[in-house]
Length: 422
Ligand SMILES: *Cc1c(COP(=O)(O)O)cnc(C)c1O
Image 1 (tube, helix red, strand yellow):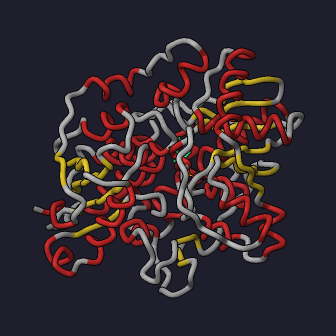
Image 2: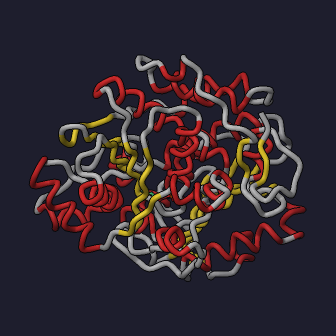
Image 3: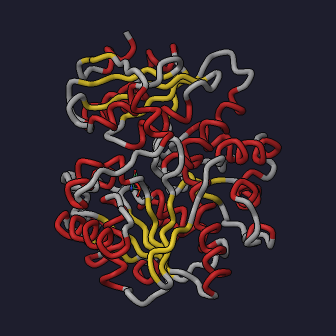
């Protein structure tokens, strides 16, 4: 299997080359040359999650140097539950928040970290991963790469731009993970990372790489839970679900579209965005207009220029197909609050603000349809939003509370790239 750039300007790569490079040299994103059909084994309802992952991912790594490692990587990376919890009649919640940092990004980050560690074994110089983060990504990447040999991580976050719990998850690591609180904004952090990648001086001193959501190694494992959930749903209800997905950079959703194209029993896919409505506007107007992001209660989706849209447009190149296959709606902060309150009163379930966007959309647009609402984070990560709405504390899952109790350390630096490599 080979991977090509969405912009068509470079030679096809193997999976592990695409993982190591991150962005394609022509500025595009790596996508599979063809999407393999799921094997009968991958569609077996009785398969435990790590084995499902192995079956779904094997074709992508066929002929690659990492091929023999895929089963071991899957066993090791996906060692936490992936439950499908009942919400009502034919509606289920896919809980993707049982990993170490309690958000779905653990799936991609843990797979990528293990794959890169194996690929890097034997390299004389360590790989340095740079991540700029405004929230969940940095924590998941730091957790996944912590203690991996041959790889070090530098996480940059805006000093005043993350919540107290997010800060804890970014600064509790040490060892091969160094955290930098930048006296600036998220945009400053991102600019510093971009400058570092362009610096000829640094290229001579370090082997730099990135682990953000455009990396193929984070996307491929996100197909697996859509296969898993839709297969279990079909067995339980006899129907194929609509997947309703809270979206920002649209990486999670691309996993669902790929899974559907590979033959997962999914009826349709619907995307919920917050007040950052670039995607729905693009679908109705046909003109892509990126905008500065606005802050919302679902802050991991505060994206004004969704990077993985390029992969969706590659998958559905003509306008007609794109409009038929992709639907996206915007949800306001008021609707998020109402949904969290209403679902709690009705069922006792506590949703995070991102998941609430998806559930609002489902109730409004497809109340009768068999559906899976994708829960991207544990509500305890957003306790300052959720607890006042439901009037009680949200218990913190054990993995997360271990992180919150660990001592924190970070360096505070000015927003200058040089300060990152002093
Ligand atoms: C990152 C994130 C999202 C958005 O996912 P994309 O892949 O960027 O669309 C949604 N919810 C949570 C909790 C996240 O951390």
